[in-house]
Every structure is written in C-alpha cells, then in structure tokens.
Image (cartoon, rainbow, N blue to C red; front, side, top):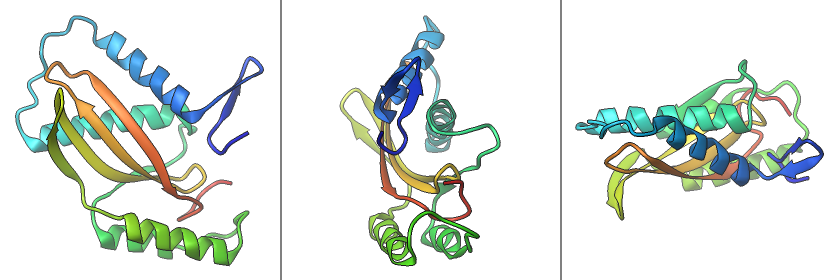
Length: 160
C-alpha cells in the first residue's frame, strides 16, 4: 500500500481517488448556489485554503492533526528545525526530505488559469509530516479542482 492510501471495505483507495471524491462531494454540496463573490485575492486565498483543509481532513488526518499553511521560507525553516522524538526514517533521509522541501518552496500565488483562477501554495500536515504542493482551480461559481503533490515527508512534529 502506498503512503496515504487507505482501506475502505477491503479495497485500497489511493490518496488521489479520495481527493477526487472529497472535491466532488464538496461541489455537489454547493448545488445551485449562485455565483460566489470572491472579489479580493485574500477572499479567494481563504476559500482555497478552507477547501484544502477539508480535503486534507477527508483524506489523511484525524481531527487532532495539525494542518498549516507555509507562506514564508522562515515558516518552512522553523518547521523543519523542530525536533522529532521518533521517526521511522533515518537522519540522512530526513535531511534529503528537508532539501527537497527547501528547493521546492515558493510563496503562495494566484494566477489566471483556464476556467478560473489558480491558487498555489504549500501546506504541512502533522499526519506523517507531509509537505504538500497544492494547486486549486476556483471557477467563478465556486467550483473547485484540486491537485495535491507530496514534496517532502517526515518533517516537523508528526505521527508515523
């Protein structure tokens, strides 16, 4: 079973499949809601962050897990410098994971994409200490399409 995969009724569901199901359920819950008025970049960003937190909760975590936005290089640095009492990977593997995270760091941004605006940012979850790169397409009606990639793992205080 791959990291992030879970068993449901004896069938292994990949993380990407669970993300698709969670986003589809979210879109269905919106139903025929009139167009969302996400005028400012801050409103759009908060909306995308809330959707990503819901997807993270639906796919990887327990309600006691932490989910954080990484907006600055110093926030990433602070996270990776935290001591972890025990971890299933070696120190060398952890250093490689830190290097991947630092190399892939970019501040949050919003760009115009096909069909809507794309919000890009990094987040961290205490479930396995994963750092995710997220791209969330938000259409003018509030519908979302989410792509999430694990860029590093076992960082910060986490549960193996």
